[in-house]
Image (cartoon, rainbow, N blue to C red; front, top):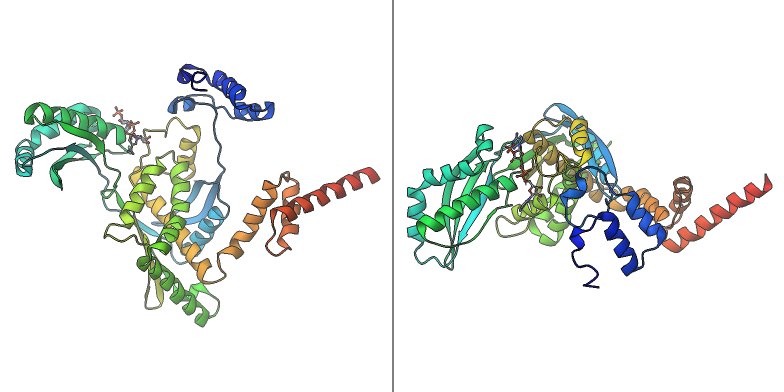
Length: 427
Ligand code: NDP
């Protein structure tokens, strides 16, 4: 097999497919499915060994009001109920007056790491003394960002212990996520450190911590809005606050709490052509910032209001990376009326907060399954091969069963098809 794949990267997607079909025994139908989804344009050049385009469903969440503006939110996800929950959560939060969101700062940090350092102070002193020179080197490595009003802002050192020292460069990356421009600047700084300080560097790369791109979304909901009856509403508020508190106390619960937030965050980040692995790593690192993994959001009772807060590191960009290459991104930016990275950061935080509100409210009231049931049953209908025409009929029949399973779904689908054939024959 190894020989067959030699210089695989040099082949065209068609040749790659033919080779895979031959060596792995792909059927005609499987080959066609792969070929039909092959993209035109530059998207195939984004990655290596391109074969086809893996598609995910995109929908829009509605009802969002953030800082007084109404938003339609494009979301890319394969998970049922995420968009429904986001829209539902947003509706309730909009009725309450809408979400407020603010960006704390928008900077990116990168590291030049030195190893085998004997005396930390010697590096620290040298960097302090040559700060301006190092910042100039970074500027010259990517001058266009300076022309755009951004560029390197500060430099500092940190003693990591065991002879490792990090020289941290902080850059204003303007509208980009900034990974590549940062790495270019860091490598230039590393060259100077090596030649002038005579110390070899171990590596240079941006940090995905994102802690200088924090964004906070907040909301304040009248408790009376949470149920028709005031006593019930107070119970819902109390239980929701308790559920949020558990995510602060118990990492096992915090992981699931945060997964729910990331359901919405990732879906929007993907729709905007951004690096969702970067956003995921940053969010989980932030969740453990005080040494224990905790829920990223916090819900409290303040008098007769329920207040929710979510702070996330969101180093996203509206230019660069895949944003211009993936054809749907600019359309999605238009749908969401995103004109700046700051606006995108605020919308992402707001989506995370609405998603979290919807999940917690469902959890402490009807339970998560009730809302999910119809969507899960639709998935089951599709899994057993129901056509788009058959899905609604099969879903309805499955909903009438308690805990429907795949065998039952197959049986019912068979019956639907038999029934259809009988009717056809009678005509
Ligand atoms: P690019 O390399 O595409 O750089 C963005 C470029 O856009 C800038 O260099 C700038 O070029 C141009 N630009 C145009 N308008 C603006 C503006 N208003 N503000 C800022 N720049 C502008 O992307 P990034 O550097 O943002 O890197 C993002 C990509 O890097 C992502 O795809 C990510 O997956 C990937 N990556 C991530 C890593 C990580 O997270 N650890 C590591 C390595 C890569 P100019 O000024 O010359 O016109």
